[in-house]
Length: 318
Image 1 (cartoon, rainbow, N blue to C red):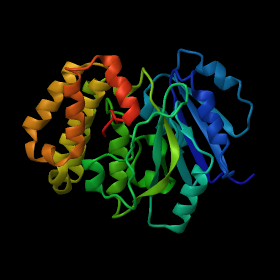
Image 2: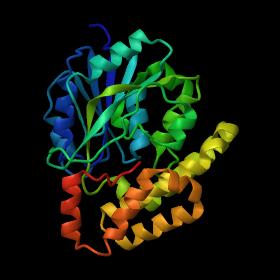
Image 3: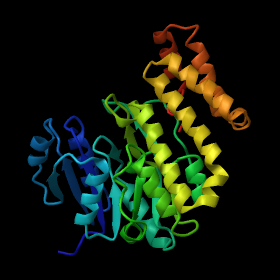
């Protein structure tokens, strides 16, 4: 049998609640030349039992001790022999046309190393969440990606295996944000080599227990990313570092807000304004989040969240 053109890497840790749906979405692709590599990263729930139930020859399961998501992704990449690599978190979903769209674009544009689709947010039950997501169109540069991380989730990405060999594996020393570092290193390979696919092809699931809940660890991870980029691309990084920090500070405030720590969200928003006043006032997203934070002083939580569902307010603000 010929080697599949695409390997879909699914790192899984305690993913029993959603892993079946993610695998099903990978197998339901209209692009048939693909294989699914699931790396069970030392799960302690029923993930292993669910994976054993899969008898499809296109699903390959690797089990390793709990070494973290970066290690699991690297294990999957090292196992693959495909020309293209796609990433799918074990709680996310691909729409059926995703691989067809990405692979065709990569074939038509040999100078592009990495593609990412638009994203729609779903909840733990798979229902759509009225939460706007970035809608980038065209290529994105290193500076633009560092300043405002519009890729949103690793599940949005399909890329060339050759570019991974050039850029190096996913860094295992990051407490969070290892995907940001990884894709920024790809962006440094050559100009205009990362491109958006302007279509919703990825469903990003938001639920309790995700790594993004602890914004303090995300901040530490992003500080590690900035240190890495200051070493690799000092001039480009210096040009956008303050903007990147302001955007991430807004993200930290939004995470605190989303999980009900309103006083901390207000403090972080004030801190962002004090640290980067010029940048803060020019971005409408900062005003939107600040208004939501102020509303927490006036409205009961259930009323506030009900209003957000109606207007589709975006907590994440990445």
